Length: 602
Image (cartoon, rainbow, N blue to C red; front, side, top):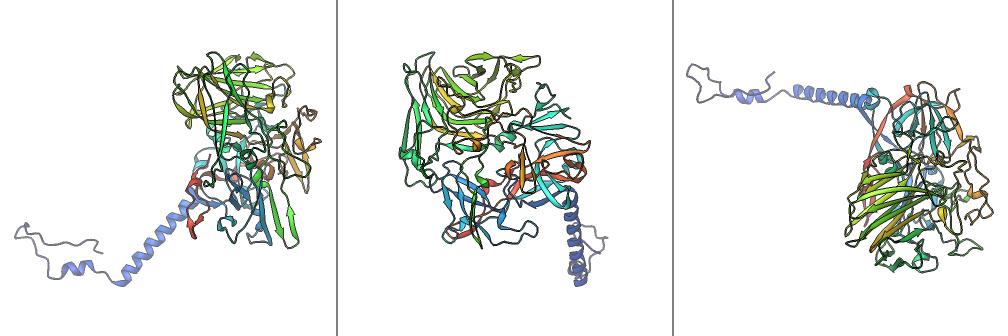
């Protein structure tokens, strides 16, 4: 079969045979049967290659439920709060049959904003973006686990042990042969398979806390407050701003300004805070107190003296349904458990010559104070308990009194700084870049404080966990353009049997107090448990859990075998990226890509 034509060349020798007339056209034309055959062969090869790629290299999946929210979305609503302008998601998987995917006579008609906690009614006829969107479409690498084993904190896809036809997606938190404990929202490991990311401090019962790497921490933090999305109660002065000056009387105080921006749908108010001419050696501190507008609840009214401990409230799970039998209201305005693993992010500028910037995080009565010297950029962290410095930071030998790192932060500059306390480890980011400490940022309070109880603390002379974040200026002037508060995932130590549930870990159950939606000052701390929920993994088993731990069916509940966990032989691959989230409709134009959600999966 001729694949290319051969033409006469004017420079060829005279003895070279000359092509006959019409040879070119004869060579280039092919019988229709031959063209059809080559087309079929090409399609067959492409199909085989695609099948091989799908079977052994990568495959695409659609997320059906919200067990991995907010990291990955199942069928959901994507709403912009009409009160504060914040964009959030609410699960709607209940609208579909879990077995067939067919629509049921159920509709989500109301959701709740995670920041201002105001209800948002769905109006699908007038707003097409209030429709229920399908789950994220993700790309899964099958080749990854053909070449290596799953690692802790990776998002994995596997065949469900109890029904192999179902594919599940969760985060891997436990590895083969390990003993795993869920306690106070964190994961603890006995006999870890790999020491990386595991605390060096071992408790009396042999467990060590497992720490998420910075990339996973950043991807799984959940918003609690944002000054770009203030509630109308704060904007109109009916509720005190959460950020308040906490400076001593002799020091210049922080001044906050709030201005309405009626033309801005995504940010209803413009907020900033500034302080000027703080004396050298003195610090003007701005502290965050978690407050919510409860005026919509009968018999309640905003009170500037009240505060709430930050809890594991998850707006994704709160919704009101409309069914054939009427409405079913499942909305609550607070979570069940106190969360101490928090992060703050500030967009801040300092004037030239300002001495230092201070960042504060509090957990369980312990203050973690990070001071950044603005002349050198050196960051130093100290831990304080009862006002005294304690040596808690895990070093090569023993425990160190401080953490140190070099940052690009200098006086006279503007930066976005994030400071996080997650998994008994401190993390620092400047302008999106993770800043490494000289030693690992891990710590252990139990190693330094005898009979320490991991519970929130409030004292009249120091709010501690009632005002768990702060930012300060020392010796100079500064202005904060935006302040945000986040919390970590809180893994609940709960098992389910039918419709009942058993909780093995209540560090402080907010719902069991006399005021179920507000933890008052001086509340009882009797719900402390040192036990947690413990699992033993088999030699080939992994322990998968959903990021949306309150609404996830995972290894905590799978009891079909003596050992807990998920067999590695049923592993499909590692979730790599969200390549096609839901689309938007703008100005009547549908199918506009949601580029913001297209990203790698951490």
